[in-house]
Amino acid sequence: MKNNVSVWFLYIIRTAKQSLYTGITTDVARRLQQHKNGKGAKHLKGHKDLSIVYQVNVGDRSTALKIEYQIKQLSKQKKERLVLQQPNLEQLLLDFLIL
Figure 1 (cartoon, helix red, strand yellow):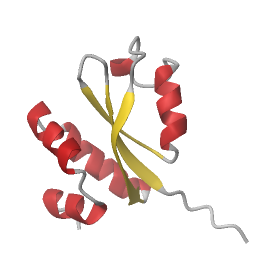
Figure 2 (figure 1 turned 135 degrees about the vertical axis):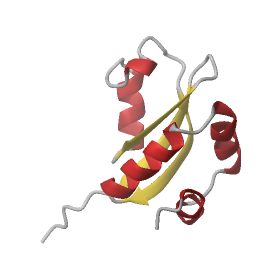
Figure 3 (figure 1 turned 45 degrees about the vertical axis):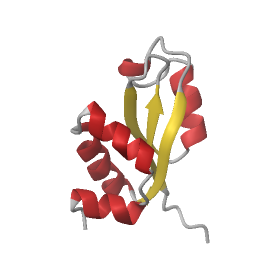
Figure 4 (figure 1 turned 30 degrees about the vertical axis):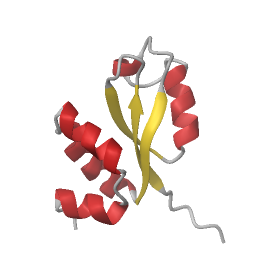
């Protein structure tokens, strides 16, 4: 019997203009392609030069949504630090006190 529990990822995309976009998905490569094709986030429409600069397996959708919300509240400087440090899930949970 197949287990239908999806594994969720949090990702951050950098645009050619150096802005950062945070999202969640069950398939990072598919979602990046959707963004490149203009599907999805309004923030990324018209941006063709997109690259994943950070991704982490966060497990379930609920956790993914909580972490995504927390990261979207960060300043650009703090998001850049996150991209630089590439924290694992445990570090993210501790940083955002999502336990």
